[in-house]
Image (cartoon, rainbow, N blue to C red; front, top):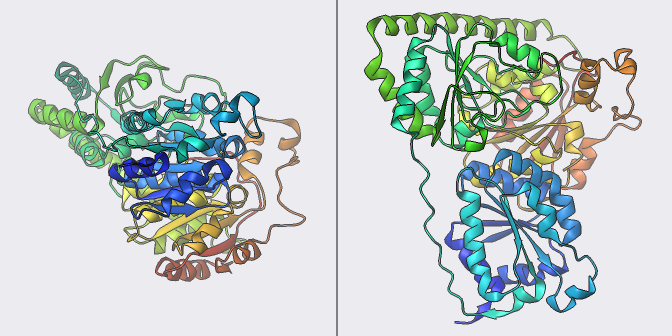
Length: 565
């Protein structure tokens, strides 16, 4: 049966379980967008700019574990999308980014808006290609989908000329089974790792976002409890997902941002089990450059072989699915542990539990001491949110100097997979991501905690929230500055910054009116300046059926060196 190439594309995508196509169209995408009207399996979600559009697909893919699909305009649209594509690339999000190309009959003329888009997208994708023959479209699409969804997962890019989208085809749309990737690391290596951990005096577990993506949290809990080892999340520069239950006694503060502090934090340990994490993806150079203390032996579990031993020698590299490998490791530990080793693990468990409880008490005390400050301190704001956050809530954050992992350290994120932070650091991601997460999990409340600077890069997402009535709560933490830049400038010891003078970092005169912005996009908005106001508004909004923006002015003073974790 003949139908257009565009219709065939949609048919195949629906067979792979795609429910939404996020997009902002231009002329070269019109045949594909027009074809959406003639089918019911896929809903088109319109965004007003490519930043929130790609972020929506990213959030959908990360939350659902399925392919996120986004369609943008030719060259200029792809250019606008590149920052969010970089975020998806760094996060390993299974994302299919598509764009229309100019009519094939015009290509030799280098027509308006034409460019070699596959070459533009290639550095930040697993695969990028432009298709020029109708008979190639479905095979290439199948290959792209498999590429995106096969670990290590990541984004892919396809472009197709507008006349090709309208061309008729009789090619059969048929999804192909994806290869299984749930294999454990080789048994001899697992036994070697188990013995090294059992012989350790002070083991520690460093866990990253790929632990959560591999649905390996429960298996990691088993290993941690068997060893009595504390678990630390990756540093804030790469901390996209929570890899361990934050209310678990063994979950400690996350790793600091900078190499010297990481080295100090790990000083007491002799063996580190690393799971689904980059070791290390540093941000700013500090000395000593190496974050690892001398003598610490690494065991590294990851589906991505590129990360094994990439920056630091690994004693035991374990290439395999994190969940399957951790389950195998737990079984070997149970079989091999002597009564003396079990007793030692229990002592470690009790010691780390007491230490982590003390740290939480200190954090609560700090929040209590800051309760009278106005505007609210970031710590008081986060403590207030921790009091009212539902157990099943999802939290999207793009406000690192405000959040500072406080919700985790207080144990407030009781459902670990529900946390999302960006790993590429291209701003504007959080608002759109939260919409994608809510579409993937319609029954869960979704709270997006966004800094004022980051919000302004993707504020158009509010229109999409209002248009489709997606009930996300957007909390804008407003310190009227790019605060992370100020913190960074001071930590670098820059002359003017150390004197409290900053260029290009303040968002004042005029200060942005977020209530007016939200209302202009059709989203009800409120301002809260007191803790109880915040608590009441957030509680009500999380139960509502429409999106809400809550604007919270927070302390303007510089917090000093950021103490992530």
